[in-house]
Image (cartoon, rainbow, N blue to C red; front, side, top):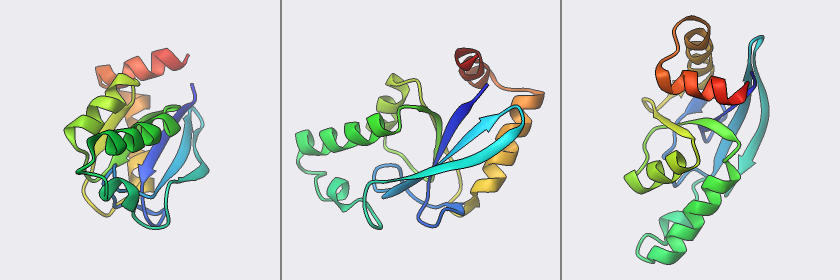
Length: 134
């Protein structure tokens, strides 16, 4: 089992950004041995203002959000502080689980909890992700 997990983060230490406006996602790989940092996927310096500034232009805005979803489509779980219903639906269509956490939650805390949950009692949605990856 090797699952990629992404975190919407401005500092690489905490989950502190909304999915759409996040300019960077920090990607980790989770395996039976633990987890390791793989890469940062950068969409913008700081906030993703292209997405923020196109909210009134539905087609452009939707296209930019789809590009972000596609760029993260190998990740099975994405942590963020907030996500709009349309973006959550886009992730679900790609079999990606969006997880909202409190702003400032440490990435390591999320990974530790996820790793323990996988080892002890994964909920049905997580069991499905694990089974798909085997």
